[in-house]
Structure formats: C-alpha cells, structure tokens
Length: 129
Image 1 (cartoon, rainbow, N blue to C red):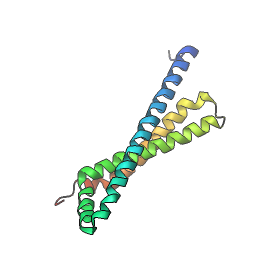
Image 2 (cartoon, one colour):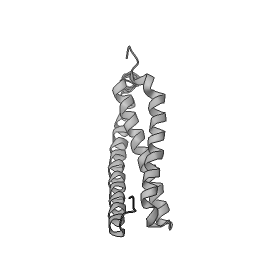
Image 3 (tube, rainbow, N blue to C red):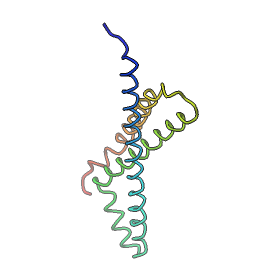
C-alpha cells in the first residue's frame, strides 16, 4: 500500500525543498533591503518639517500600508526563521532533517503571521481613514 519514497526520489524532494528555502531567503533578503531604502526615504521627510512628516505618517496608517506592513512582517519572519534553519544545518544537524526544518519553519512563520493578521485586522477595515 503506502511505502516510503525511494532514496533517489527522497533526495530529489529534499533537494527541491532546499532550493525553495534558498530562493525564499534570497527574495525576502532583497525585499528587506528595498524596505530599508524606502524607510530611509520616509524618515528623511522629517527634514521637511513636522507638518510634512505628520501628513506622511497619516498616509502610512491607511489600510493599504497596514497590509504592506504585514508583508514586511512576513519577510522578516521568513528570513529570520529560515536563517535559523540554515544555522542549524551548518552547525551539524543532518541534511536528512532539512525537509522537517523547512516545514517547521513555515509552520512557525504561518502561526506568527496568523496572530499578527488577527491583531491588525481591525486596522485594515476601519472606517474614516
């Protein structure tokens, strides 16, 4: 009936999981660098005076930017959790556990994102903003 995959199939699956984890780390890393540059630009508006900065902060509290903040949190969580996964693999945790570590990392990221989304949900759908 059910049997474990052949060693060749298992290596292919593990290699693919590692590739997806690697790709996700690169994408989240680039996204975080781009965010850092945007953050510097936003903070620099304070040089134009308090009124300009207050207008910008009001805009950044609008629902589309709250959703964008959730994507930022997703990038930070994924990058951090998968970075810990890489550290464990480099510290000697066997590559046989790579797939389990990947899925555990995704689970941790998903749970944290669910909690964060629940917390900011009222901010996304508030009226009068």
